[in-house]
Length: 399
Image (cartoon, rainbow, N blue to C red; front, side, top):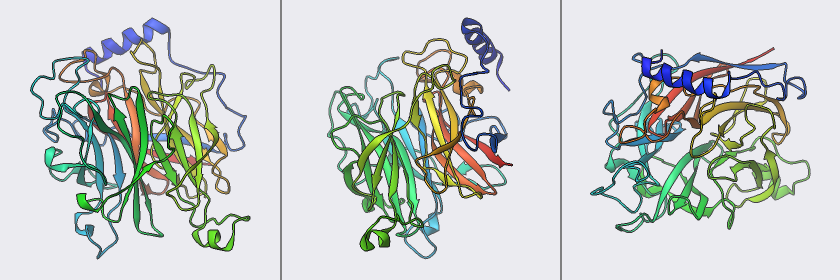
């Protein structure tokens, strides 16, 4: 439940712009499987105390802010790193000079943009999710590249990880953003790969997903079991085409479609998803974590909205989470899409009524992590208030 302060903030926000929803200009009835699917939140916060999964406040991170997070499965049994199990890639920020002094921080060169930490985790389908150990400077990884050089001013950092595991090659594909000068004037989504995410030295950097383009994150879907009918014999052996869904904004705008035959070189192929005027996501959309296959053969895709920076009162908060269902035969086709937000900032630590050393951004739930649990049930892993890592359980229901 919300704290008294949190409830007061939420009430004031709603009163400033009217009650949230319904949004009559969404897609109800207009997509071929809209009536077939629904997604329900089965556990809003599996942590018994109502706390975050990772937080400076509960001692699971030594950084002031640990937030957007990707999940990865354990390396195959018997391979390097398998004994450490599944894990998380976490964006960490030491301080935010927009809100408070950053004098004396250890890493001014990336302190505001961020750095990625990798930690083993235990996220059981039943029970209490947790991490193994603490997110601290020893967990920081620069995936296949050198760390930004020590500097007294902000240079560049690593932001917003997303990760897809490819069973065919036992390879992990991590996308992350090079955020230069706090993402202005440059933000570029990079691709790194490894066969053991737990080994900091094992990563290979392949460069930008879409070179020369301002991008804000990418989620990859491999189609190794779906060779193209028009592909050459060599290409059919590699299957595909494979898809990357790429954000075109530092906040939220549209999601671009990119295609690839090898999973490393990508070509832009137009707009995949756009905002819908008069709908809950009219302010713009941003890509979430990797799409995952459902028991029906279709795919679940989580996406985000961002109503703008600086935040202005909005019943949706600044960032919220929705979903789309992608066609099993052609994942470039959306067959169902949420008519309202799936997750919003309703827990106290997601709301951040006063920015400062304890939290970064007001009313934020933004997801870059998704773990399948079986039976069309998933953990959605997200950043709350750009400060903590949250986790919620959802189930996709099909008629």
